[in-house]
Length: 481
Image (cartoon, rainbow, N blue to C red; front, side):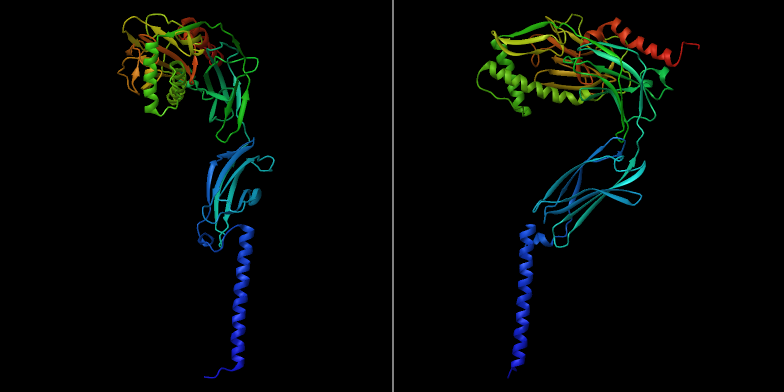
């Protein structure tokens, strides 16, 4: 067969065009790879999976103050290309963020403070739009839309009780109204912590028609310094609108005592072995050197952190209604050997192990005795802890709880209801006990406070009952009026 020279030339030209086309495409792909750091010859370049958008801090609405929004965008395949965040109202979108991802980036964290007033948004509805695109051939995209309510109205706080007089390390009570809208959270705010209040109608039936009336029991921590620390009332609605109000209070310092716990070498060794066993079982990290005092110091500190972390949850959960009545009683008929807040020093043969303020009171006895509930309430915790030993917590409602530790035994279970004076266990020497005893704490919203006030009929009458009577008279009037 004879091939015409023109046919040979045409075939050669087609081959040339094919080579040229492949060269151009290859060169383009190589240039694309150099610029974007995406390898077009990898399978990921042809993926069809879009980026994943997750909320880190999801808004529930927008209020008068800026609202922080945080998201995390990831793409495990070709990597992220661009993330766009905008807000739209009345079909008028406004870009908040338009961010190109770094070459080869698989994740992007974005945090935005949205100020609706500065953006010119009006009260009503708006839509937050989040879009993300990857670096694949198809530029796969994801979209998250969030409908938000915009509301600029803030609650208003009106203080009812004229004065709150407390002692450092003690407790206090304030009554107030939240007017304008129902708050999502409210209470006494101090040092970054909100001590929540509760509807007053659950405290006293005479307030059942006052839905805007609240009361808050709040602690005055042992380290409170009136010259640099402060307290105020705070109310916040569900979308973050917050109002604060100052209230009259006066704190008085208290003179603390001191006491020592002198452990014999045998008792110190016994406690060390017990804490070391707990540390091993509970994965509590403590550095051990072989020196009794050094090891005991390390184990006590690590165990204290562990005990407090375990207790934080039951101490933060409380009934929003009154479970107790009148003043409290001591868990034993004897007087405690120290007061909460006293400076405690633990030693072994003159060597100091630890020194710091005690958060509870110890009741030491010479023989095993019954331990009784300080007031009525509901058992919220029962367990054995490294330092506290056999421990029972009773929730009394409105943030108030009592703690009973170093028990030898208890028949209590979480959820059990108890009455004032009811037996909840027996004294013991578990945990860090020095002898046969019960260790007793009063906690308010998890903060240790002096139990002496709650044992005192006069204090309960002056700081709780008289205040309630004042509010009743102020709002309702004298009986028969």
